[in-house]
Image 1 (cartoon, rainbow, N blue to C red):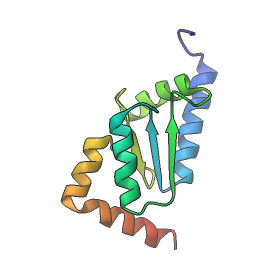
Image 2: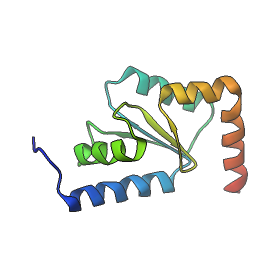
Image 3: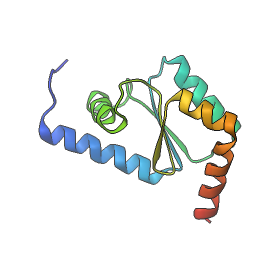
Length: 116
């Protein structure tokens, strides 16, 4: 496994993250074996999110570069990292907090209206 990423590799990874986040209502960056990631995906599906892309960093080409770029964007190395309507909401705890407060419905309903 390579050590440091080159500048061009970092830029390309950041572009890929932005493209994914901009192209979907919900983008979930995760690991295939992560229980919190599976729980987050389940919560989002129960909420009826149909435009959900799940990026498994451990199974994706350039996953190491994507994870490094994501650390820069999210300011953490923890997964899952969730973006809703282009806004970073954090990980599983951020999602749970939005669900508990009821704000998740508002956020998703606003998105559905915006995309109509």
